[in-house]
Amino acid sequence: MPVFWGQKTELIGPVRSARHYFLDYAMEHDAIYVHIGWSLWLWRIYRSWALTI
View 1 (spheres, rainbow, N blue to C red):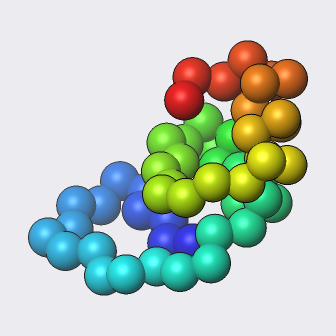
View 2: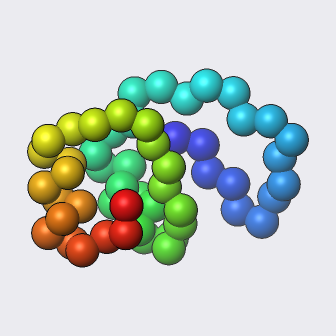
């Protein structure tokens, strides 16, 4: 999971294999977390936390 803090980047290459615990890291920093894909387990967590998806 790449993390950009106060930096601009021109290009972000492919990042693979997002993990459910990455969401914990993102939330610790009030970050925006973007992913493409689907997981029933993670969908249930999103709903229980009332996150905007």
